[in-house]
Length: 231
Image (cartoon, helix red, strand yellow):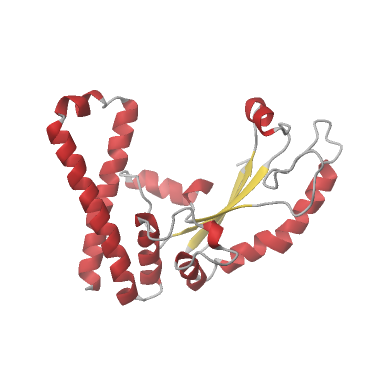
């Protein structure tokens, strides 16, 4: 597309996204509508998609995933100062375009100095697993999920399986399954206790939320099947 590019490899997909700003956002961020952010992400095929019940929809998303669906993400920060803006995650382009060549010269430098090395680092599943297991080092900010969270456990488990480390993977997936089985039980108890309130929330937004919850619950059962195979 005009804002997002994908590179499909055997075990992963690389995503590069140019983030633009409309006039409202640009006003709040104190930049111009010509300014942009640059976002990177990596999506591993070894980690199943979440929140999608329709297999065709999931297949489409594997083909052209949104940047935010990547398991590892980086919001690129510029390494040079711009007098117009202190924020490093926005590349400021003046309204008259007078500095556009300068901005893109620095962007080209970032491609070789930061973007390509970042994707190269995550070409190794061992590095991806290493990031999951530590909150230290330069790659710690590439994960949105906090240490010990269900999503972090899920990601760690599936990456470990892809590396053939099944015994290592088992406790992480088990913790993920326990959390969501508990969430499923609590949700069903709520529906049983407040049936009218649950039914009232089933507008379009409510149906989407329910669909998302159900897909997570299905995945919890799927993780249980994986655990049976591992153990």
